[in-house]
Image: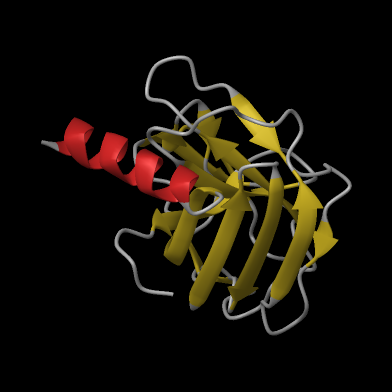
Length: 172
């Protein structure tokens, strides 16, 4: 049934000139951490860990993050527009802050090979309230996207902070 939904969504989006659309997001939670150690001398109690929450081959950030809202459109020609609001730490001494992060977006279109299609890894600055905008083109451009996953990632280490929720249906 899920495979059928993915194929139906891919065909619908392609017909509208979109490879994928996203409405809402889920913040990263480093589930499955095998061992955790607080790095001494770190001003924000930074966590060093092994294991973690891996989505399609990409490791999550070492802290819990929340995101208030995300909307993203990926056009068939690779153009992508992402609007994120409230990407903030949800744990640690800097809770409620954006931690001065710089982010980029990665689209992964399948459940087996995890080929990555990303915006420029120079990224965009997240403002203190956690808001950001990405207007870019994916490189390379996928020809189809049967099972879209959109990750908002750190320029510093490539880990993901938030994952987009695929938009299903005709609502704009």
